[in-house]
Length: 193
Image (cartoon, rainbow, N blue to C red; front, side, top):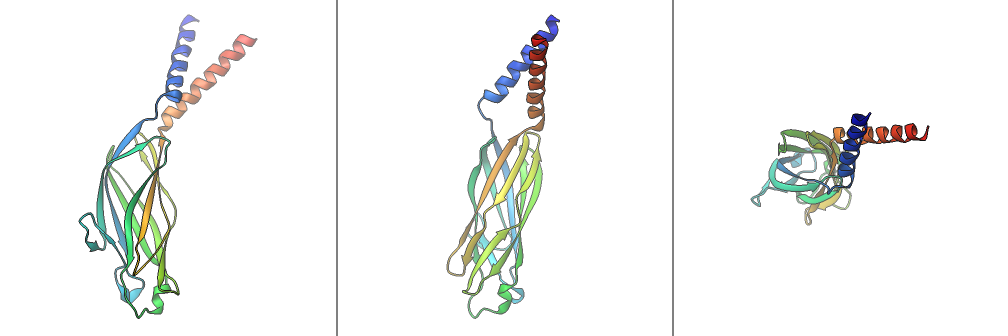
């Protein structure tokens, strides 16, 4: 009986430290590649800038030491996008074109994921970029949700795509905290009876 009480106390202290302890920051390293339509003959052509300041398509950029705290949203400017065409515009600019961002993480572990979206011209010679939705990547340290911001852009002005990184603690840690809670409730019921 004493061992069970001691074990429950250890679990309770561990859960308390887990819940009240400082949020852990995780460093992410890797790269991302932006791929979009680069041919004006088939529709709205767009380009982005690489780490060296060159306009290229596809564009691969790296990130080193992206410091994200568990449970806290982290925002960063990911890339700039430009329309790569000049007047006269053809009607095919109004047809949505695909764009993708492929994330390749090298640490804390090797994980990849793709977010897709569309670019489309609008009547006043501007354009708009819309993303299909966030992706969830599973690391040994927990889940990382990445979403990208929709943005207007054009020939004469760039759009800035902002990435939001939201890390969630490891599921096993949450399961451990839940188990401790169940044990604590059972202990209270046993004392009350």
